[in-house]
Length: 353
Image (cartoon, rainbow, N blue to C red; front, side):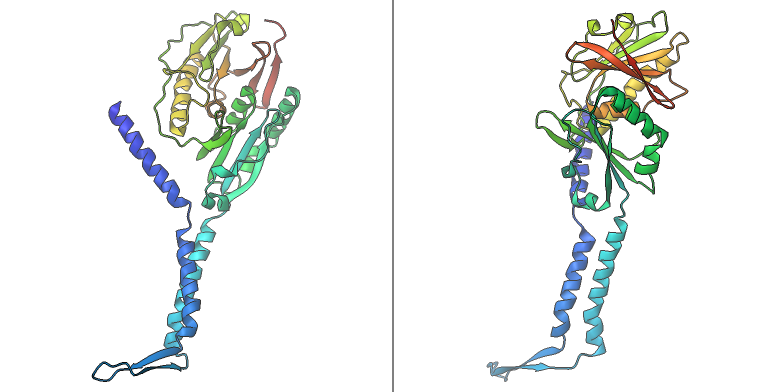
């Protein structure tokens, strides 16, 4: 544990150092200096200064004369300009717009402006136009829009198209929609998450030190109910209580938590985030393998990025159908849910417990 922690610190330090180096344009900067030097030197190359000194090293005078530019002086002055121009062109060409940006805005009052501060100057050059997903209207309209986005294969055609090499994604929405959007990213790679930090009300990438936060080693003892439904309750931001769940699932839900105190934005390192979702995936695989399980219900109190990353773990055809429930703070109950399907999501409203 100690050696792993030291290694993670060293790895984090060098990642930050590399990120700092990427924020500048070394080739362009050097190229600009060469071009500038060439422009400055060209007229001076036709002049020379002759200093006449007698044997006694007494300074008698200086003579400034202008000569014709020779082919040699022309080449020597023009070569830096060519080299510098090529260096600038090469770096600009390397910075093709192959970085996608996605903002999920599904809560009232959430801005649809992408947090530009999370990108370095070099990343801004490569960034494509921002794609804003979801709407902050009523749930039914959100479901309608999401299913339309699935129908047109939005991520493949408008986000990950044309040799996309990197994706920045984050935002705020109801947990079921965040998981659903994550499910659309199952085949995507090189994803970088950004999260809203509630204590500072600012956006940031998950590039803090890896604290190796883990889930408790909980045995999945709960059995499915008579209809084959079983639940997983994961509380990392706030605690989830049994009384908040639908009555039919209160005795058929496995409660999972972490080893440390629950806080918002608990996980600020992306590798740690992926390990958490990987641990949860093992529980999902275990429950899906049970013959008497028909559906898996999720009750999640987690940060937005973990909900998206969890959705990426969905394996249609391998897992039993996922049903993600939404918590209503006013009633203290889970009022509705979304069921993932190949055609999008299916909305379920829970009028009575």
